[in-house]
Image (tube, rainbow, N blue to C red; front, side, top):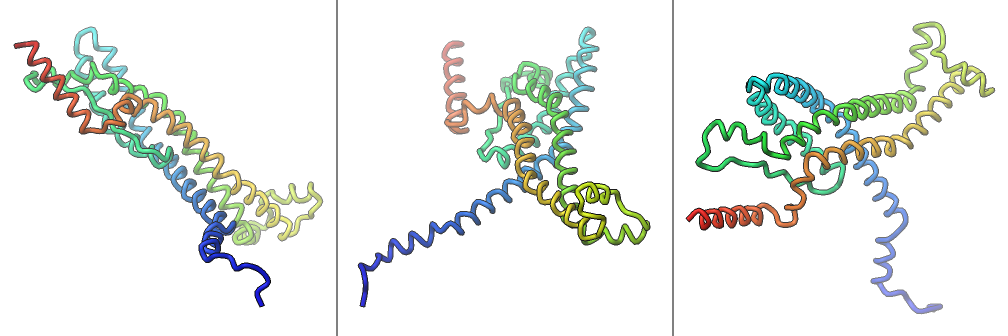
Length: 261
């Protein structure tokens, strides 16, 4: 005999969907996914930052140094043109870290009837082009830091967690320890292989737990700087989209034609 009212099937289904186990698995999947995105960003940002820094320093120094004789003006324009491609590559990496779409900037364009020289020198009057140049300069130290920390932390974590699998080979080949026995003796654990493996595993677990936090902080810092320099001028137009921007350009051209008539 039933001892109480039966629960509706809807409540049972809702309860099964909101089980703590399912929530924990989804949370862990989210952490691992973000860790992969942050790691990929920090490791791949350095190959982009290196040529950007070289082009920025070389082109800007050569352009400013020879601007007195007007040779530096086309050099600066060429530098700004070259930085557009590297800035686009750096901008394409930001959405995975910031979890938001990044709008591409709308660079200043010369009029349709402008001469070739004016078209070539148009980037000199474009604010986003100069911000790309600034990004190439200030992003380089952060890219080095992020690359070194991400690569070293991953290597140390993997080496510590897999220590019991390979350390015995090193000890047998060299005939002596790797220095970890000094720590285990200081802790009073002795110098047995089990004590060394336990200490290495403990250190690897601590580094594994801190890995998502450390890489997330570095990735957010570098991506925040990239967003501020590579996409800040385009974000006010983002709610309107490219169609609205094209309509605004058409309207401005129409007003200019009326005024000139």
